[in-house]
Image (cartoon, rainbow, N blue to C red; front, side, top):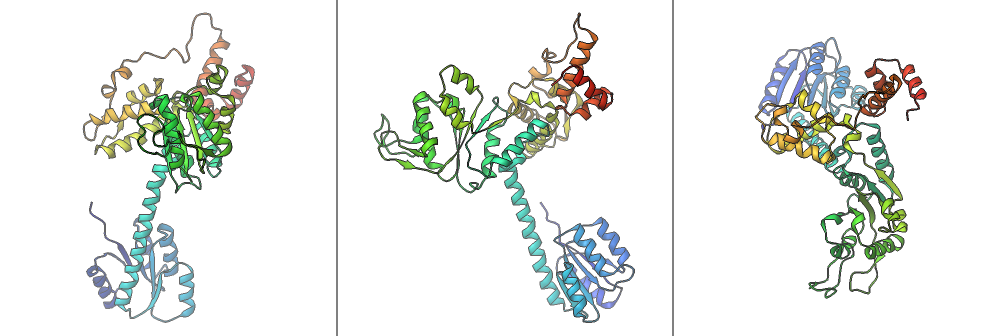
Length: 453
């Protein structure tokens, strides 16, 4: 990609010295703009992002100090060099206080000016690179990867921000594909442990007999095939965070060891006698009802309460369908970039199909769906209904939503409509009233009348 040249705006009356300055800057490799008065310069600043402003302090119509303020408002990192025919310490001090990079008197020392500009442009490049770096870090590890604006998602964001700085154990609950791993990553990335290891273990992907060794490690000869001593995930995560996904799958004996670790922050490797102390924050996740498993005797009650010090529920996608357009756009951007595609968007028919589908696989299913559609898309196209997977093209209307049947009273119908509309807007009463074309006071009265929660 061709990089644009730094843009320099010179503001000074027409003269031989000004012409020499413009030519000198062009020879130095800059894109040069010129304004003979302050008004012209002001108009340029209103339409262009300037990297360097070289302005006569007493320029006609709009003075240099005002141009300095406007330039810094447009670009806080702009390099402003104020010039004047007379040396004036007070004016120089004022200009520097307002954010000028340098103050020079005429005739200009072009060699000195070149050094000043090069230093400023180098600083601007560094600031831009750091901004891009922080943006990429935030996209990878921050909250930006968790997309949604519904009340339930806002609650998730708020809880993550509140508990991230602590060392509290967290239990994330939610169906498969809702984004529990993203939430765990965000908690770690926004904690004081962000520069230490973030270690994951998915218990559902491992045999029950392997999970204990993966968590706590083993000594050489601890079992058949243990040819060498191996650290477990707790030791690897020392100083950082361990994320145990599908914690419901661990065996009763491993539950006992996990409970002991949470109580004492100590462990022993399989086949070992040495007690090892580690400093690890634990985040667990499950797609099952742990309380139900406790009642069935399949999960220890004391371990449940140790894990659920802070409980965060990640909602199903069908509970926050108004987030689907945001997610669709985010995945379009992601996979256009990943697959070097140029898909412009989705048609109304595709969005309608997305909004009426129940998404049993949640956000992960939507993401995979978008990637598959983009993979076969033509350049600069808009994804249409024909691009949808067969199960989405052929879906039947859901029977879980609102429907009218014989025998319903008008009050029943009205209550059902209000409930479904509230659900679709995330219980945003202003939007609900607008969609139903009724007054907000009327909506509140109906909610109270029908005892809608």
